[in-house]
Structures are given as structure tokens and as C-alpha cells.
Image (cartoon, rainbow, N blue to C red; front, side, top):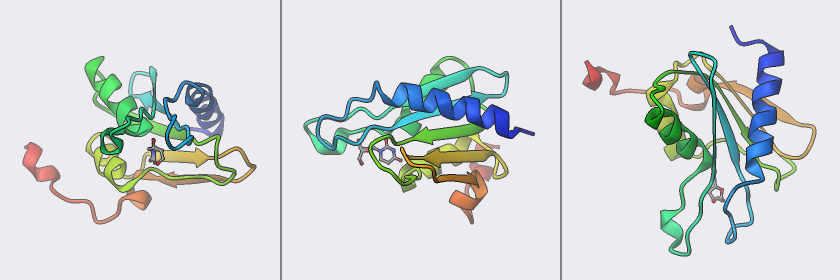
Length: 136
Ligand code: THU
């Protein structure tokens, strides 16, 4: 079980890394922090491109970095969007990728610069998930 204190720490990492986002086009910075099964925290930011469709989201970038470092299971995810007051959740593509590596009961927290934060789960964000049998 991940307690609130751990989620607070994870979210702080997401807030810190969000300042490194490369978002000159949208001016919408996103930071993601993943808690790996062994306790390692891996972070990522959105990286935009002048060919807009090539932009990659913070959540997927954090997952790609983690996988390249040998981490395949994640216990929790925090996402910070400092340029919006209200929380902004992971996009649809990220939800699919998140569901590859995180169980439905894994906690996901996201918040903007305001007080409001959303404490959800992978299963809540991506219900009726399918196709995991292809990995067997
Ligand atoms: N973005 C993310 O990094 N994660 C999301 O889940 C939502 C969108 C980025 C993509 C783009 O650089 C900017 O936020 C605005 O869409």
C-alpha cells in the first residue's frame, strides 16, 4: 500500500521535474514521477517539437526512461501541470501505455498549481482494459 506521505513525496518529484519540460509551443509544462517496485523514482517531462505531432507526453517519457533502466512494474504515478490551476489527467494514449506496466489498483495523483488534486487509480482512469493476454 502506498500511503499519503509517499504520494506527497512522489508528487513533489513531479512538480520539480515539470520545470524541465520542453514546451515552447503549448507553454503547458508537465512532469511525471513513477514509483518503481524497488522504490526507485523515475521522472519525465513532455518534450514538444515544431512538427507538433511528434510531441511526447511526460507520462510516456517517464515510462520509457524507466524501462530503459530495467524497471517494468510501477506502484504509483504522480503528474504535475504547473501551468494549469486545475488538475490535468493523463491523455488517452498515456492511459493505455500506463496500463501496460501498472495494475488497476495502482494510485495516480494529478494536480495543477491550485489546491485541488485528483487521487485516482489506473483502473479508474482506464476501465474495461483489454489485450493483456497477448503477453502470455
Ligand atoms: N501532455 C502531457 O505531457 N501529458 C498529458 O497527459 C497531457 C498532455 C503535454 C503534451 C503537450 O506538450 C502539452 O502537454 C499540451 O498538450
